[in-house]
Length: 209
Ligand SMILES: [Fe+2]
Image 1: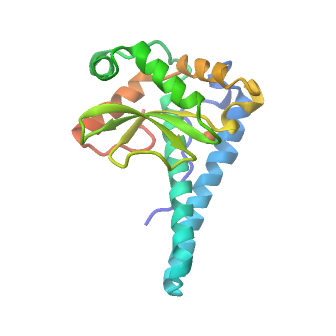
Image 2: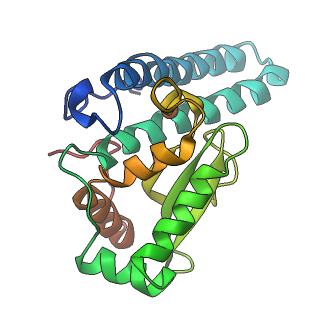
């Protein structure tokens, strides 16, 4: 079984500036995301030890630690590939048509995901996901990394609303940070995730480019 690994980024830490500063990217990827990777690996190791000791009372807490850290690892891995220095504009093709169908318009999706991200209490994410059971696009407001997300869904576009994602640059004005995120969304990446989710094809956390 493989250890979880911090993925490299497809761009330099400073490449998303001015939307996201290089200082934030270095800390966010190199420290925060790295900590979730380490936390997930540590939880797996501690779960293995607890099983060997038959210490079932320790398992629940460790399972929760794994869910938190592994979800944090997955969401950040998607977040980095959702963003690009060449991003922005709006989606076209099948993704664009599906957004029109399920939300009414791109502007309606934008307003809904912006609100989900902007109104997180504490730490969390705004997430656009594909729900294969209802055959529809949905927006979730995820709490922490792993709560309030329907288990049917595949995340397609994720906006990090944790303070570590913006506070060094935007201070308490989270709305400006979210506005800037829209200018660096890599719709080609979101579209590939949409296609894979609908076809049932496996897709790596980090897209090969
Ligand atoms: Fe984050």
